[in-house]
Image (tube, rainbow, N blue to C red; front, side):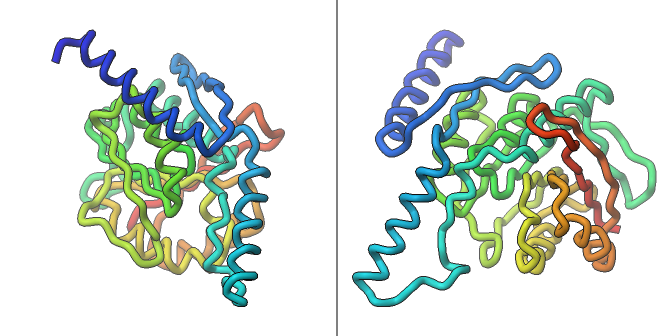
Length: 262
């Protein structure tokens, strides 16, 4: 397709998708700059209002059915908040590309590593929310699958990654029960360690989906659960390397846990 026609088609698709999202959510447009990369980004204007709407709907269903949904069945809109960990992940990916011109992938389970350009990497943004971390990866050339339990999150991820739509896919996914028929060189997770009971589902999911020489890269804002996770994951045969990334939205840096199978 002619480049101008391709750009026009992408713009038309983005306009239709934005109109679809705007029918349900108030939006705010912003941008993020990571090094030389500047990304426009559309997010929920008022995450608290989304939470109120979910709570009101749960109350309505309870009045109709007489049954209160169990806490682990509530679809709380965590996706509607832009977490600092996603910003930290995005900044780290750009820095890795700038400093190393690639992403380090271990070979043959040895301590040495080899650099690959991000354009050669298959990437999964797990629990993607509005898709910031995965969009950064796509902008750097990666092939990205955005995965989230909540369909609205995937709409935002599609909208934000639209300029790179030819190498982006979305998938509604419950990491407790679902599996994908593929493995990834890089699995991203922004602030998905907050709840201890989820680790028992996340660890086997990562094990089933990370490529033999690949890595899991997790953004974690410094919660106590993050402290406990370090020893917990080491006991399950993973090698953990720590990084830190400063973000403008908080005084303390985001912790980044890079996991590889031993």
